[in-house]
Image (tube, rainbow, N blue to C red; front, top):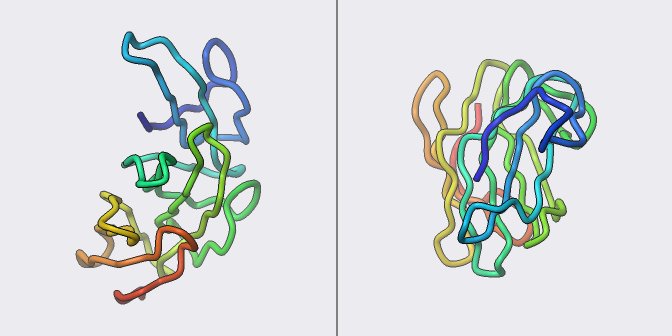
Length: 141
């Protein structure tokens, strides 16, 4: 599961500052197998997660961080896509958007592509290659 946390105690570890995207993997009974705080010194909010065909996960998030694990912020809030392996280690990540506010509503996988739905000044659908995070189609303002 994915959400957000500004804690750095109890079950939450590794906070990077302010609010981080918090990813938690549990077993079938709800016992935490692992958890990861992802982000930078700004605000990073997890909005969507889906398991990928390689047993890892693709995460949709929103971020205004320009440091830590977040790179390539385009201004204000961008949507931030993170590909992690089955243990929660980052394989790749990237920020997408324009100079205004861009929110990621949903990210999911179809075959070898990640489909994202964005909400900013208008709703868009963007296609990325899951393995590399390379933009396949869609407009980014």
